[in-house]
Image (cartoon, rainbow, N blue to C red; front, side, top):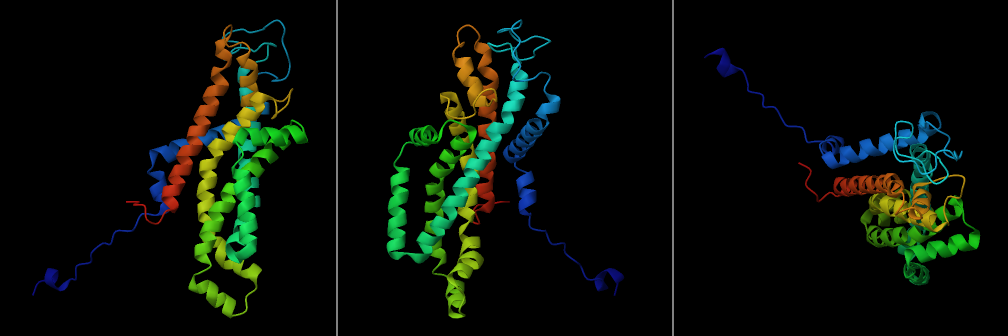
Length: 292
């Protein structure tokens, strides 16, 4: 008998791809993450990287086109467009993330209580959510901003309140399913309190849909913040955001159309990145989606 016949053959088993490995093989997700990371770096480094003061006017350089001194040109007060674009990235991104986070902070607990308690609590909460969802997005946000006064903070609060019913409805629907699971009945049988059941058992299994929706909602939040700033209810002068830049550029659309392109393209690319990353996250967290 030969040695080869005596030696057992060991077959190599293929390791299942991890979620991180699958995510890194998605060109759309990688491009979106790289762009958003670059944008975050620009927003944090704007005070040091911006070539000019974004709030200081230069009346000798009014409405100049792109040149070696001003790569993207200047606005109606002679301020450098590139510097204002870099400084406007921070407020735009912060407003988008903060408004979605506020919407989750309000909507997730409300959805948990409505779905888990049921009865008249669910009925009252559901009717309030339906009433909030019936309002048009921008009109509702403008109404809140008009009552509280125009500022970045009030715009953020308005968008957060506006987004909260969406999270509440998603979490409520998932909670109605999770509360029927056997591990919830077992926890209740062992004397666990309602708050412990909600935090330890229901919330981890109901939050997934809210996380996916948050990624998709970031693009809408960015566009909504830009709309509020465009209408004058968001970031106030002398500070700037991309929506505020578009508002000033609109008055000179015929004489200086180049003013609209930088903030408009920045909003477009950022919204596409949010959508791409959110859609990839949805597929990643969906157990029924193939990830080969």
